[in-house]
Length: 459
Image (cartoon, rainbow, N blue to C red; front, side, top):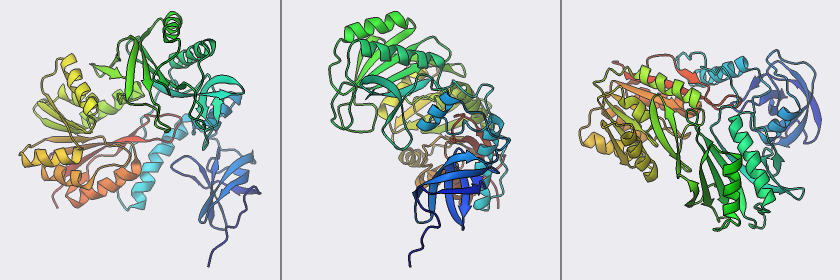
């Protein structure tokens, strides 16, 4: 027998917020039925409208705060636009409360899985805004005019924006300059419905430590009309631009970048530094977007690894070598593996660029290469893993623990897969030996990075 939800879509209700979901939505219960409400904090009494009804839970939107939490931050008209676009989902929460929320998320998952592991206070930023060094901004026609902005949440309707709050202000300025040049040169914006129009997205990358900027024009067509005029105007109005590229993506897809990249001006890369190492960053390189917090995160990983200069380290998921190079300055040798071949080539170049010779990089799936190294008798002292959100493959955990390293340093971007993997390591004799350290890599958003150390513990 089907159970009917105790609420109706588009109807108004009142309730008290009990908790927050991992996405930062307020939880209100009506007859034991959970409703997830935007812009609602624990302890607040809210009047809300139900926007979606499912079998076991629904969604709602606040109409009025009948009481407000001391953790509530003031939101002005500009911030409400950001909220519509979902750019800063936690902006209605004061920053200390955001840091507590992230610590609590990991603690709750550990408790739910009956793991008695402590979690340190989240390592935050002095200025938790204007931190992103990369932007990929859609370009669309809005009210007859080319606009740049961000999609309204759960839709493909563009909200025009000029201040993105969490981006480096130089990036915000560059997007407006490029938008105005594209308007002036009468470049048609992409239309998702008809798959017509030229310019799909504007990408901007900005160095943190070096005054270099890359502008990427992602086009639906192989040719960019008036490319010379566009380049001349960009370089005149933004003199610190050192690279302008055109990336061609003619597929009807939500994937932003396509397979073809042409250099229109300057170099195909920009440069930036992390912990004293210099990196070449191309249009498609994966490079952490918050340089200030990344240095804290990587230094923490080095410190927790306890390197003395005599260790052999494996860096699974090495990317362009950011963690590998940082570790190489404190270890005897570092082996890196990454599935993306262009990233491995970049990692090799970056090692050479920094005069580091104690690194070896392989192109392979991390779990396959770990098994291979294990068969070859490689004996690492430390294994560093920094996997994508899906966490670690079970075969990687098997190979890693079979190698019997003294420590596994786990850099996580997803608490739920971290907790699952901690349990898998536990089954193979590796246990967490220090409090988990969350790092706020993405202030104003619910995303949580953390560093965990696992060591072989005798039964």
